Amino acid sequence: MLASSGAIIIPATAGHSATVVALHSGLGGQGEEWLTLIGPGLRDCFPWVKPLRPITVHGGEVMRAWYDLSTFDLESDSTHDESGVFETVRYLDNIIQQEMDIGIPPSRTVLMGFSQGAGMVLLTALTGRGTRGQSKDDGWKLAGVVPLSGRVPLRSKFKSLASPYVSETPIFWAHGEEDAVVKYQYGLTCAEMLVNEVAVPTLERRELGSPGLCFVTYSGLVTL
Image (cartoon, rainbow, N blue to C red; front, side, top):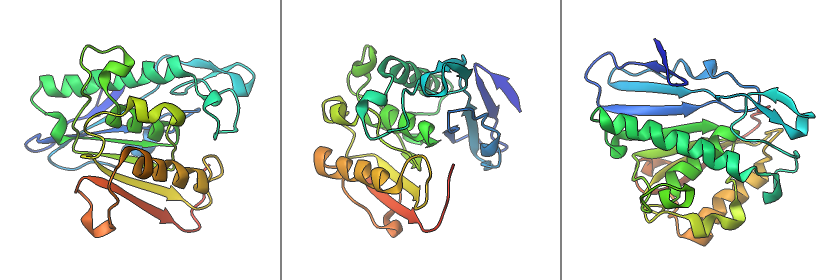
């Protein structure tokens, strides 16, 4: 297990053929909760927040977070630190590029994230790179994206940010019905926005791996 470039990297044990990039929750998270996600042909990459940043909603306390948060009223775009959001998305862009440089194309790369991390993988996977100051506008065509109990940051702007591949990306969205931070109904509203506003197809669970969105509710699951 190697620590490099602000990430824990677990090399594949046999024939590296795909990569999973998994983001921890953000606020105060460390990332160790992901370290059981290991498969023989997978290279697993677990980025951690770097550097630490002051968090407004916690009185300016310096802690790990993918972006600043001004309030726990998460349904307002005003809660989003747009510059911090795109700083993190560019960080993930660089990780995807690094995987390309060693022979793993985006079509063999999956992004996964929990809570704040879920929002970051959604933006990275589903928006054009030109929206965050990159030279290319087209975005990534990834193997898939897995948001867990998250939301879509900058929701009111998302349609204008969407990549040409937004409807071609497999999305597995799991949400705990009793989530104490990102309320279940708001997570569902964000998922429905992807379907209704940017034409992401809906999927049944048996269709996982196909382009489109499969939203799965975990009844009674509490996430903090």
